[in-house]
Amino acid sequence: MEIPEQDAAHMARAVELAGRGHGSTSPNPVVGCVVLDAAGAVAGEGFHAYAGGPHAEVVALARAGERARGGTAYVTLEPCDHTGRTGPCSVALLDAGVARVVIAVADPNPKAAGGAARLRAHGVAVTSGTLTGAAERVNEEWLTYARLGRSHVTWKFAATLDGRSAAADGTSQWITSPEARADVHRLRAAAGAIVAGVGTVLADDPSLTARPATPAIDPSLTARPTTPAIDPSLAARPAAPAIDPGVPGRTPLRVVIDTEARTPQDARVLDDRAPTLIAVADDAETALKADLLRLPRHANGLDLHALLRELAAREVVSVFVEGGPALAGSFVAQGLVDRVVAYLAPALLGSGRAALGAAGVETIAGIHRLTFDDIAPIGPDLRLIARPTQP
Ligand code: AOF
Ligand code: ZN
Image 1: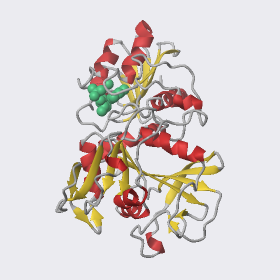
Image 2: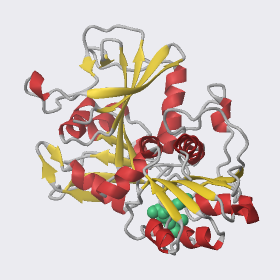
Image 3: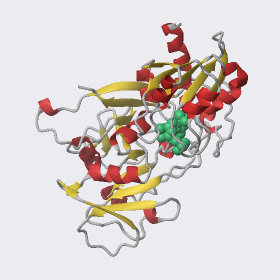
Image 4: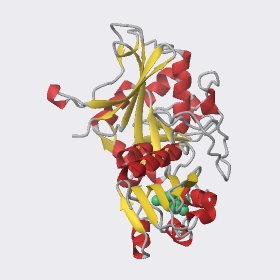
């Protein structure tokens, strides 16, 4: 018998478990699973911890053992029906004798989908659409990647309260606090790639690496192992953060948007601390010794859709766009910003560089409306997370 409130509560737990895989499952999704016994008591829980590791369902079923027989499984993503890095979860659920499966989100991956149909065909009661919104949100990056065939984009900026990212003379250091900068490094570490424009490379010579988080900021988030254990511990953790906290030690790809190939050979982004792609126009002439990605031109720059499709083909699930305002404006203008993370310092400049450059808006009717998702104090600053408002 269906008990919708209990379904929602168990699925909420599965969503929370899924979030524990954040930052370490790429290029796979984050997935959580709760298995109840026939009497409705929780018999096993699991989440997907890393690509190639056991799927959430397999972890939860292993914990439930014989108690899964006649029970119910709650899964945030439709169970897979394929043999990829591991075997099909649909078959694992059937073998365990589970009587009912509750699914939040259908699997958009054509290679893996079909689990719900196989389970139904074998007499398992399948309920779909439970807590879909929360399950979509926790797996937002991967779902964007799987559905649209492009990397998910987060644009991050730091600015004064009046939206300035640099003073009139171009100086921009230390607008936000050390705490905010440490937070940025944690978010960077969770991304598949960090993207910056060549203007930023020429002006600041950034290394675009994700330095480890400062433990003083949030020790609970740095306690993760770099290499996830086979059997991830399900011990209680603090409430899931609003945004992927990242895994210390991972090295995202660095990508420079450099239409005319102006990156200097001795730029820090070309050091050996992380792999780097220099995206240049397909007709750009250059002798630069670097991994070049040739892309079609678009407006004054590069076709960013093509960039994100190329990155997705390299299994980059999510990118973090930083520096500078012109590049960010191009991403916004091309409708390619999925999430905005703004660090606002309680300070005023009154003149200087705006955080966002031209974004294709001619008049107020063209405004890019966003909806706030989360607002958090970070040291003396504020971190605001917003996403494009759905029409
Ligand atoms: C996961 N973890 O818990 C579930 C997944 O490469 P594979 O063989 O691990 O399969 C990955 C696909 O399996 C993935 O794209 C998704 O469609 C499906 N379900 N994947 O990594 C899980 N349940
Ligand atoms: Zn599976």
